Length: 193
Ligand SMILES: [Ca+2]
Image 1 (cartoon, rainbow, N blue to C red):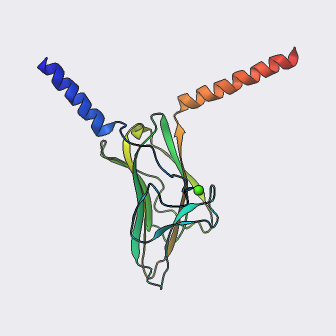
Image 2: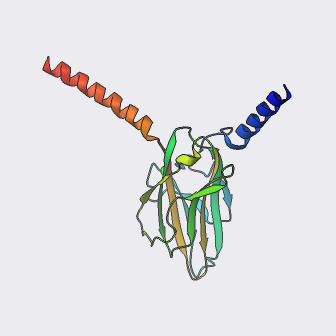
Image 3: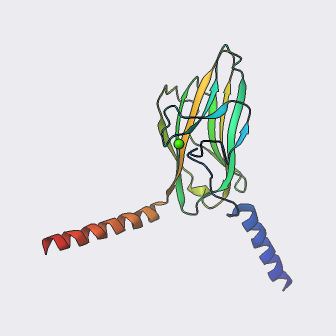
């Protein structure tokens, strides 16, 4: 009985430590027009409407060189990933030298983190790019996502973030595709008859 109780307690503790207990990502497209759901540090990040990659709003960090551009800022959020998550995609863009920004997904219970883009990429002036990362090891777990930017008086920068999406694992997509094919086959049969 005691051993049973210990097993139950251990399992419960394991679930609390690593498994889904919180809310899903909030405002991952920034379409509330605010940073609702996100924790802001520093004064670089704000909501903008000038050329979003999706919808009307996106998040942007700006540090202007020669105008007191020094500083650092981040937006981050703790949430539970979807149980069928395979990949995460984020639209990002920037101007500035490499190493001034990062986008990371951290999983405290696994003690691991995944970089959502290679930090050495050169500037993408006025262009969005979709970055997709395999994050299947973190599905159904509590994680923290953080976008970080830093600027100096000699190295100003812009960092754009929008449209955070989760892509299901292949099995789910095969099922969806299979349903579509069945529908198509049915239509063809009806067409021939
Ligand atoms: Ca948006």
